Amino acid sequence: MNRPTLKVVVTGASSDLGLILAHMISKGDLFGLDQWLDLVLVEHGSKLKQVRTGCLPELMTCNPRLVRKYWCTSSMDQAFTDADVIFLASGTPPSHGLSRNDIIGTNALESRAFGQALNRVAKSSVKIVVIMDPQNTNLAVLSYFTPELKPCNMTALSRVDQNRASTMIARMLNIANDKVTNVTMWGNRSQDIFPDIRHATVDLLGRTMPAYDAVKDDFYLKYKFIELLQNRDGDIQRKHKSHTHLTTAVATVQHTRDWLLGTKPGQWTSMIVISDGSYGIEKGLPFSFPVKVTTPGEWEIAQGLHLNYYEADKLMERALEVKNERHFAYSILQLAEAQVSVKEDEEGEVEKAKATTWHFGHADPIPCSILGPLERERMGSSM
Ligand SMILES: NC(=O)c1ccc[n+]([C@@H]2O[C@H](COP(=O)([O-])OP(=O)(O)OC[C@H]3O[C@@H](n4cnc5c(N)ncnc54)[C@H](O)[C@@H]3O)[C@@H](O)[C@H]2O)c1
Image 1: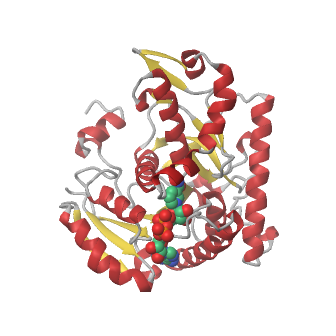
Image 2: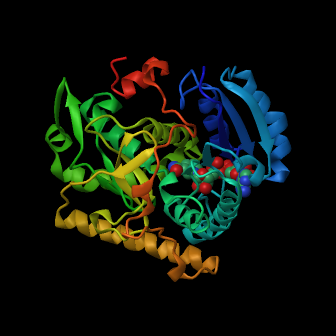
Image 3: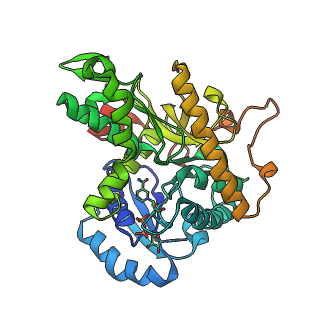
């Protein structure tokens, strides 16, 4: 293991989500089996003891051979200094009795605190994944308070919904989930996120074909499927009587692996990123798009998906929803809308275009030869 140790931060470490995520990272699901890690577990002061005396022993019992050092802290500055990857997995979850606006308001305050700390101490290559609900709004707030960081280094999670949609199709066709590709989630991570199956493909007995042709039920895919998918989160929470921590942790690892290692040729994944104006979505608006990663650590919005009138209309509706929620969050924080920080260069290109290649925060790219078998398969490498 010649690569420098990575510093990885998980906030909300005492919750099931934080613990499962920390466990998956510790056992190499994210960076592979040949990467040393320093893992920082962040919790509020009142729960820090619980992390030290409960969560940490739990994690250590699972034989996390890749972790060189654990830190437990309430200090964001301490946690974020020199961090390579940060998972913002804390915040208030949607629950009975709290409206979406309540959640937006509470978590916007959290995001502001995270943003201010990141802006003070984070290094410019840090990668940040927003899991806190609602992801689009929190990404907007975070980006607002981090003028020193590039917006391309922050993404938020819509992969949970993509995975659910892929699973639903896979089950209809009796195939494995990973035989369903290029399902896209557009828009706002709310109940109204818009699933696009029309561009999805499936591998049926070795033959790649459009998902629509394989399912052969246009009416179902256009209406019932979308309704079922949009209610899935609530359904699971009601029936399982808990938040969807396992699916979220798994989706977070998949999202981050795609971002840091790359998507397979010809494939894309759904990610909430800051819009560069693609598909008519206002520049600077956090929106779930189809995203490709050909250079590890640099996402680009997949171009050229033809949208019909109905779909284009849905995208505009979703964009309006994000704008309204962002407006609400900004009003809680008493921020002026005009100050929205879309960082542009002289040609008006969103900073993304100037992004430097990210090599796990260090000087050298990950040489394929030291990747594990899973990574090699992922990178399509013949090494
Ligand atoms: N599908 C998804 O994308 C998905 C699924 C589950 C949860 N979430 C989101 O993740 C967040 C956490 O959900 P949960 O169910 O684990 O909630 P939870 O209430 O069980 O745990 C949140 C934890 O975060 C901690 N916390 C709050 N502010 C903090 C801060 N500033 N620093 C460190 N720790 C802090 C709390 O003390 C608590 O332990 C919520 O915003 C939720 O909506 C998203």
